[in-house]
Length: 450
Image (cartoon, rainbow, N blue to C red; front, top):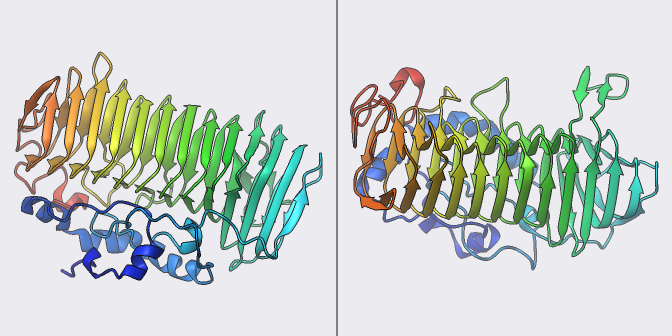
């Protein structure tokens, strides 16, 4: 099996270029290395091959940043997701080059249509306005919000019909985008690419979308706040969201390097899912501050949720849900009424697994039939601190292994992983039995099954 590229080989120049997120501790327990490495090449190569090839082409031409890159640490290379080349310099640049920028002042009822690559400054206040992006498939468009306010009744404030990538960048200013009533449906006479398109987000993009900047973006929606039918990246800005649907939704992936994200009263906070393909839909977080209150899931992905570094306060029915959930760092506080963390059978590409390698995880569960950490497959604790309070702290159907770190159950420190419901008891067994006998094994396609 080919080994992943080690961060030791990353040069000082690349350290600067991709400075965004925290590294995983390379001194993990040897058993953890075995757990993480098994079948990783085949599964990830297939799951992310399309993404990698598209990233290579889309990143060509991204402007190199000069002075505003994040400089705290590196992206991860040895987790479930290799994020070494995930963020381009321009993704991480928080200020736009305004040398040749075009300026628009908002006016009531007057839409703005952008048809070519470039930087566009939007300012002023208006109602019933949509900024349309209808650029070429290789064009990169940067929309710079500079004290801009758009209030619509039933259509997006920003609608990206076509482009290679669109940046929504805030200046050091307050900006507000809102949709107050039910969203309209656009038919084929307006949008020739599809018979119908449900425009159900204040910022709606059919292509890659990046939100960055140094200012504040307030989004209020009667449904979703931000939707990308491709990949959504967040690398900056303070974003305040109030909605009834998902705050941030993407088909392929949500990738977060930095920013302050405050989400209130939404159904889901971050949601990555493609109804037609269960091999995509992951969430990668390596920085930023999150304060999320959701009526359903705070963070929801079909395939992988990987958290390498972040400060999180999550409140919801289920706070983190995905098939493979890997925590490699960060400070995460969870208050849940159903499952604090739920590794569920959502993707046929992976065995449901929760893996803790570093960081601090504090989970407080509500009363009743609730689980702090629930896995339909396996649980591996290799490092970090897990502090769980609730009637049921752990629940798993496959294998559980404690290899290091600190586990606190209802105030008592332990070195075992209890099993509250059906499964194999502390530290083993369950459905399939043994370390590699997790729920499904080879037939399920999970990373630990043989």
